[in-house]
Amino acid sequence: MEGVELRTERLMVRTPRTGDGVRYARYYAENCDFLQPYSPRFDASMFAERDWEASIPIIQQQFANGQAARFCLFLGDEMAGVANLTQISRDPSYSCTLGYTLCERHQGKGLMYEALQAIVQYAFDRRHLHRIQANYMPHNRRSGDLLRRLGFHVEGYARDYLLIDGRWEDHVLTSLTNTDWS
Image (cartoon, rainbow, N blue to C red; front, side, top):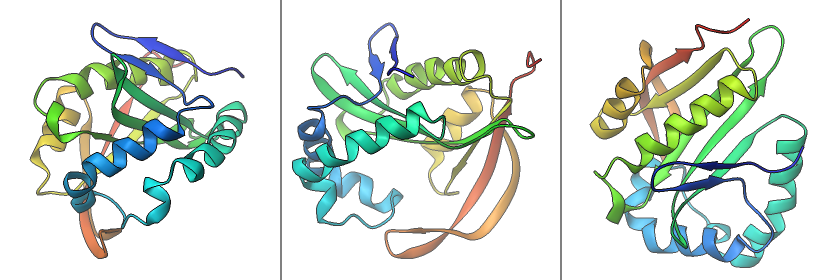
């Protein structure tokens, strides 16, 4: 399966290509302080072009195998964010987990909403998924508001759910189902 390009009003949302390692490394280096409180602890590989470049064939293989779909969000030539559909499962659940980050300087402009609308449509229409799960830390109101705007419903609360920046963090569990799935 080849990569995917999803165009929105302002963004090019696409799967990574050879040569994107420099963009990934720059994105995480420039946004490290902003993203770290919401992410597993970064190690040196997050900022290394060579390490990212070496991971791109693995990302592409996971995409081809139907295991994951990782996307770069481009605003012009700038990588402004990333969004990933991981843990893609087929029969019987037809589900995945959604994760995303957006650089600090583009917060509050509706870019992630725009990107995730296209990614959700892709997941439902082209990957034939029934359910997308997304979780957020209770204090991350911006993420909770975004998921609600996209139609995700709260399903529960998980204590000490993920190791984020070296601490076990609670998460609100949400999902969106494809009501047109057949």
